[in-house]
Image (tube, rainbow, N blue to C red; front, side):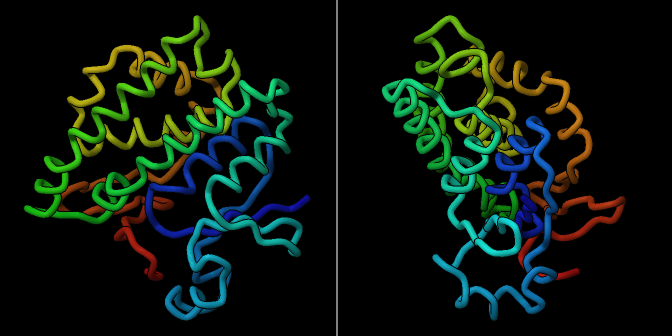
Length: 226
């Protein structure tokens, strides 16, 4: 099975799928949208189901859109499915709740600058704090490292991405939640996760001039080729 993950130049919804694949030895290629489609995103967008990315291409035949669907497919492929239906549903609720942190956190960190960044940061902080508390409460319900047990699955990678990204927005917020800080450390210290975090493009200039450093070259975040 040959996989291609199609997305843009930003640290957002393609992160959790890549973490899951790297940590479970699932081979894939990360392809920028303009390379995959052979045309600018504005022209390719109307032709795609649900008109958004990321998209996972499977064996050159199937296109899986929507980030949660991609994560669940990869979770099954990695043999991480939770057998108990109740525990599986609880994990899915955590996954969905984590993905709801996408807006406005991800767009703000990747694109907002100057006063817009500061206004967005202040505006979203109460909602982030509430959701972070809810995620911390879920972790406190058991004695394991992660939400269900000691295995890192889709819910964990999705939560990690957004919690980790929040430090680019406001590094003080996560410090209010010690159990979440421990969770972040536990995920980041998995050897294959450590390697992924070291290898991935660095996000710099947040709030001023957001850029991804890809192969040593600084590129402005966005959906257009540079």
